[in-house]
Image 1 (cartoon, rainbow, N blue to C red):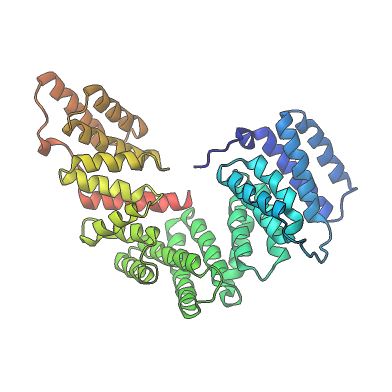
Image 2 (cartoon, one colour):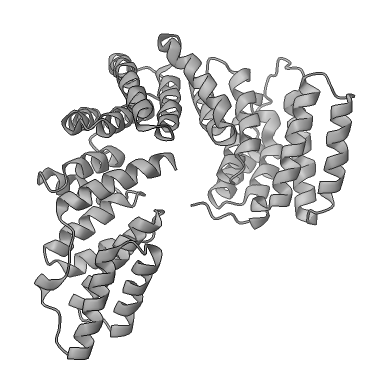
Length: 425
């Protein structure tokens, strides 16, 4: 989850102004700058601007200028020589972006934009706005970058990604066009288009979802073969990982677990340290192969940002009586972004580990209470909480065998479903 240095980027008032500026930008692009529709948008903007803070007004003014600049007729542009000062500003831009200082990053980019191509400037602007949570604005800049350099597959792929957030219906239409004749498009674009259709399928009836998965698998298999055959392809490794992951997801949702495992293994031959593929194979084999634990532990060592390896290893260590390691996995997992159901499970296992390690009663109680509050349907958490409270009354510790625990198979089914949901949430 992104924590912006300037919370006003999340302001609904500013979002309304941004949407108005985009609408005006599109009217100007269409040659309707003096139309009645444009006047209506300007009138609405005048009212909305009054609700902004001074900082937001300044941001809106610069956004208007930036949008206007990409609406101008495209001219041959030769970037100026990158001077020492411009290079320093560019370095400061990347630092500000890394620190989530969005306004400062955009200002620094304007200071060195004459030394960059218009496509690169738009790509970098789009990246800032997307990371700041404004996919509507990001999409406009990514679109300009893609149209300015139509041969750059990366620009087109990130444009599709941003569009899927700002206008899912439009993204679905573009994705369908790509998948109708995938050989005409770069593999990274095909992978992104397939991802958009995969996400669409998750929101439809099961029968339609299954049909879409079956249609996507051969398209993705051919995409994978193209990526394996040509090492010079743009964004080969990221496109390869996405394609492998999607084939695995499709097979998983169709109940073809062995096919999913084989696909992940195929991907790991080329990318043995890809934490996402390690996690995917580890989850799919959890409770059925010792390879699962090796995969998940390696993913943790690689610094996986996902909650899943920590969740599964927490369960493995808990059922193995390795409570300190379970406690550590729970702590790390709770720092990740996840659903309330997943967080509830981690809190429950943390509470049990804390009880076994002799933590103070009030800390164990807080962990159990949090688990039951996050997911009231987590019945094992409530029963274990009740057993813990009863042990305090009777002054007898709970025998390890009396904690109610989910089997590895139950955790695998839970994790697969939660991970699939998280991939499209």
